[in-house]
Image 1 (tube, helix red, strand yellow):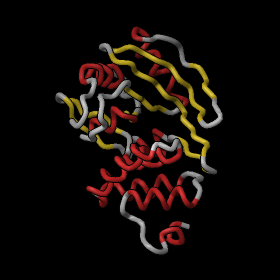
Image 2 (cartoon, rainbow, N blue to C red):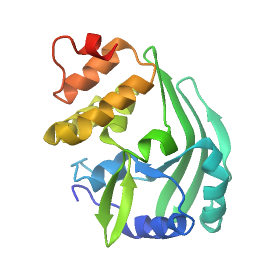
Image 3 (cartoon, rainbow, N blue to C red):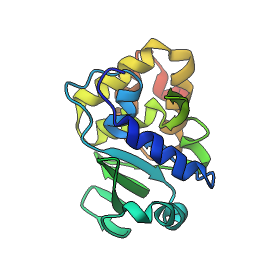
Length: 201
């Protein structure tokens, strides 16, 4: 792994959620670190994405570790249902129905329909962890203006474009993104070419 990941917490989380086959994906800095990305420091928390309708079931499974209860969180840029847990010493944030509105774009996480089917199973101590597609990290970090993280995701996509670019294009097509965001994402993934915008429209 590039940056140290909370291995014990990840294993325990996978066991808890795997007991009822919950549909979830791991994202954020932990997800990137699991892919071997060098982030400069260990992940500070563990982000778990689920669809809105699955928040209650996941919270029930994680209740012994809960620091609060799921609550709607709405800011100028983000909308989600959030709750927090302490598992094996690591802070875990459960994010349900995540939606970003920024830079004349709207991006939403569709876990059951898109992110989980397109996830990468990354092995850790014998457990396959569902890690969010790199296209999510690229788009999300462009929208929140974290170019450093977007560039990391772009380089990882470019390392295996045949695997990751189709998933990126799917996310670009399913979300209402400003044309320049889509073009920027494709450039960072080294997949942009003249006429790209027209080909997607």
